[in-house]
Amino acid sequence: MCRHLGWLGREASVSSLVLDPPQGLRVQSYAPRRQKHGLMNADGWGVGFFDDTTPRRWRSAAPLWGDVSFDSIAPALRSHCVVAAVRSATVGMPIEASATAPFTDGRWLLSHNGVVDRDVLPLSAAAESTCDSAVLAALIFAHGLDALGHTIVEVGAADPNARLNILAANGSRLLATTWGDTLSILRRDDGVVLASEPYDDQPGWEDLPDRHLIEVTAERVTMTALNPTKG
Ligand code: GLN
Image (cartoon, rainbow, N blue to C red; front, side, top):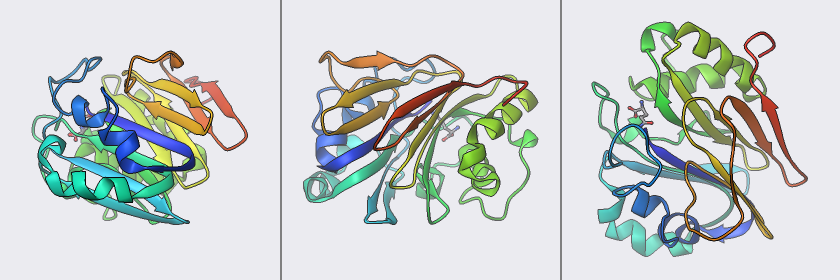
């Protein structure tokens, strides 16, 4: 299981979201508190953000805690919409930057926290890596993000052991699913954070229920149960 974080709100620095919080993704890379699968997230990291409407990414197959160059630059990276992740590779998956979230189709940034049997997914030339998460991302992009809930229910039915926590953003919408792992929300005055686990112990964090689709826009947060019959 990896850990991921999404931000939609006023412009904020990447360091304030990912590196500075006392239990943020940097700390979660070696000492996550709520991770149920895997001990640490040392197999890479990725930060994606929207530069106006253009998604931009910085990914690495090395641990986040040791990246002094990123540490120096992150305070200068500012965005209204961010998707970041630290990775604990599933056994058998390649460890390479291209297997590290966030994945993109040029419009969306997407992270997968979980595992899925690649045999239930269609092969895709568009997948950035042979990693299960990259193949799943290609399927989600092919179906379109408006069908995210439906796609997750379908994949979950095909692989009952799958864990399918997705986090995706396009600059104006933040979408997430809970399917087998933790996710929390923090509604701040200046925006909304969705994160695999709280990045601090301040009040305000709420745990989200499993098997739900969450959508955050500038106006509202909506939550829908992922129902196998209706998707
Ligand atoms: N299965 C994915 C990978 O190998 C994601 C792993 C995770 O959530 N830890 O990268």
